[in-house]
Image 1: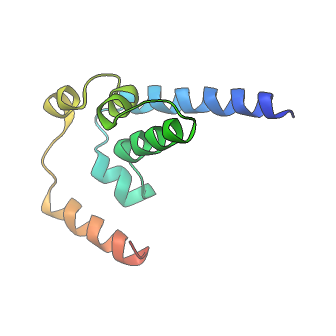
Image 2: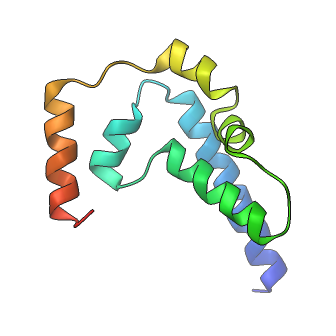
Length: 100
């Protein structure tokens, strides 16, 4: 496999991941953090870092809009719920287990 082919496949997989996360707005970021150690905001941060490394301008709001498919504040208003005490406890336990 060439580097170009690998990059194209990775980009396609990333686009599919974004589409899946946009479709699954019922899955909260805290749940993703508990189970996988990353969330939509992490993806946006990684995207912004990659843009910077490539010399491309992208601020945090632009990166989040790319990941969420809409401005972050709109997504929060439509989909984000307050974390439950159980979620917060699970998040803290996960952080302790993984040394974060």
